[in-house]
Amino acid sequence: MFRHSIRTLLVGLCSLTAVSQATTAVAAALPADQQRAAHTAAGARHSQTVSDLATVVKGEAFAYASYGLLGTQADREAHPAIGRLFRTTMQSGLNENLRRAATLAGMVGGNAANLRQAIEGESYEHQVMYRGFADQARKDGDLEAARLFTELAADEGRHRDAYRTALTVVTTGRGTIPAPPKADVVSVPAGLPKVKAARTRANLDTAMHGEALAHAKYMLFAAHARQTGNPALARLFEGTAGVELHEHFAGEAVLAGLVRTTKTNLRQAVIREHDNATTLYPMFAKRATAVGDTAAARCFREMTATAAKRAAAFQQALDQMH
Image (cartoon, rainbow, N blue to C red; front, top):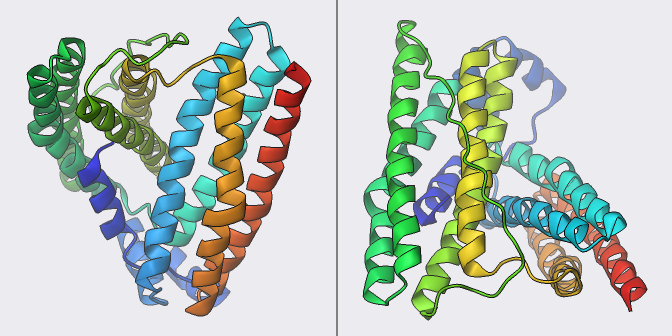
């Protein structure tokens, strides 16, 4: 969602756990917030593993958001098989990599803790980040970006207020969870960046990664809320997640020129997955092994194999276009 959101995520990832079946059985009898504390106490992990898991979550969240748009572009160019490939890959990334890394990291807390994390992030985005980005874009002559950043700052303020109300309901048992917001879906055609300043382009990249992360986190929070018998809170998280993805991320993607032709999109996907398979994930696995984080190391090794398969599939699709 934003740089502060990444910092908040790292705080939330302060402990990784390898919980035995006996510990899990005991923890399952506790309230949700106490369950998380029990899992944290079961075994701290190395700070580098924490950071590496955070990187996986952030990267997979961005891939999920991006591949959906790239799949739509493939459909526009009458490449339905490639569209399906992008969509299949985005779903596998969510289910196989992002969720697994988030689970290892203990990323999701109780409903109240999740709301506090969301409130902190939305507050920063509303008060500091997007307002600062808007001022910078205005000074650099990127007026369209300045308008978008200003609009998003206002949106995040509304999200913060809704989460504050929800937190009161969750903690006091009084009141009503706000209705979920509805996304004003933005179409993202292929095109070049619509901003001229390097600073604006960098800010758009920061914002897109943050919005993708926010979407992923809120969907995880929604699943937890539903599992703990709070469907109204789940709907609030899901609705906000939809705004972050289909409106905020998409609006920024238009200005950033994220989507290009399908050939170009495939080339970029090959590069990303190849880098993950040959450099990033193997490095994470090696570091986790060195500090005794065996569960994380195994996870990273399996992610390495998955990324290699993705790269090969994208390369095959690209070769067939020539």
